[in-house]
Length: 301
Length: 239
Ligand SMILES: Nc1ncnc2c1ncn2[C@@H]1O[C@H](COP(=O)(O)OP(=O)(O)O)[C@@H](O)[C@H]1O
Ligand SMILES: [Mg+2]
Image 1 (cartoon, rainbow over the protein chains, first blue to last red):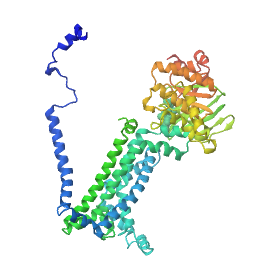
Image 2 (cartoon, each protein chain N blue to C red):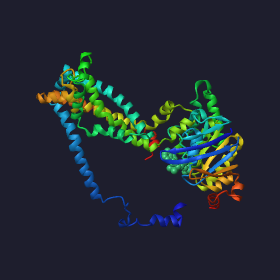
Image 3 (spheres, helix red, strand yellow):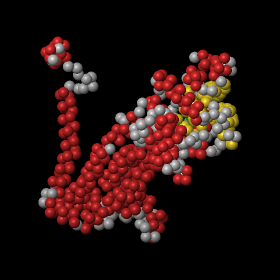
Image 4 (cartoon, rainbow over the protein chains, first blue to last red):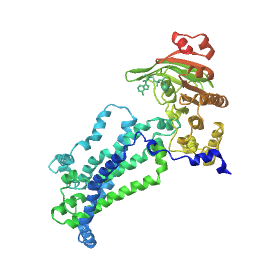
């Protein structure tokens, strides 16, 4: 009979340890500090993130859902959505490729001019988008030699899709490369060298070793790049000429509609843009949940 | 395979990693490159494996000048210092990697690959771990998997960089014997790097003592212990 065991009985009867003796982890702050900090963060989050989001949807649906949907059916609004998606579809894959190439070059090889390349990768972060847009106008505008020739041959850059793509490419260039570089540096070259000694070609090594090892950083980089590509305003505003129904992207159309006091139309389009962003966040979260095991096995942080 | 190193030198920018060194390694030998950290052991090993190319000098494999031969053509079974297992692949996929990377005409079929991987897993005495990932293995198991992965390509030589460096003393002793056994079974010319003189002496047929990018002495373990050629060798072997 277990309860007859004296040790066990004594154990059962032992009073609970006094509360004052409970050990507190040295890295844990007192409860009030924690609560205050969490409170501040939550307040800021709701002020900066949730309130604007709510406001956008509230404004959009102010005249009812029918009015909102009707404003989306407008030819200019549809054209803006199509243009923004087109630009993202062109720039994101290109910048993913450029980003991989740049990160690969910077992290896996030593060459002259490496620090220059590093600076160049960051240039879009430090240059104002408006200035970047102006540079493209100065280079490819109709009154320059190159631009004049391009217009004459029927391929205008400025005030047309190529200019918007160029501007967006420039602005979103760092996202993928910046996301990949720390991961590639941390992983070093050993696995790639191992693949080479096992007889794999450089390309096979890239596909079977490098790419799988960076795939999560690549996903994040691409998602960030995409979000920025769809949201870019400043540089695109300069190069696009804001031609309604032709070169006006979603952010530009939103601004124009807002300036014309068409607030339901403006906010509905803004809501669509916000929904696209939320969709991307949802995809990212779904990927994280689905591949949680693989993530922890590879990252091990 | 007989390996002849003929006055090989290697510079990294301004640093001289290797002064011209010459060395002849007979077919089937088990050779230790022994020396303190920074003495150029890894550099010499990487030059043999084709991961680095010499500034001057030649490498001859079986008498043929192979200095410019690519890393893939050399077919050296390379075991890296921290093993460099592919972390996103299972043990099976790691070992099969070299076979799957072969050109189609030389690639064994699926069943043959599975058979060979199983045989290698038996050789390293880890049958049944094929479906695990490297992160789920102990240090000693990882080392043996790295060895099997290198052996899978039917290498012409084995090159191992500090193969016991990352292990505790007990695993070290066990795996030392494991490497000796595998060497004796395969008869492959094997070169391993170590900074542990006891390990070099216990395991190798031929010990190459290196210091500051130079070869101080080449000899059998007993010769090196009894007749050190330089002060450096005497002090290093005594230590
Ligand atoms: N990729 C490299 N770039 C510059 N210097 C290097 C490189 N690899 C090795 N070295 C230098 O060459 C010397 C020999 O290095 P190494 O062959 O790694 O020595 P060991 O393996 O004996 O410790 C060291 O001084 C090291 O700093
Ligand atoms: Mg070394």
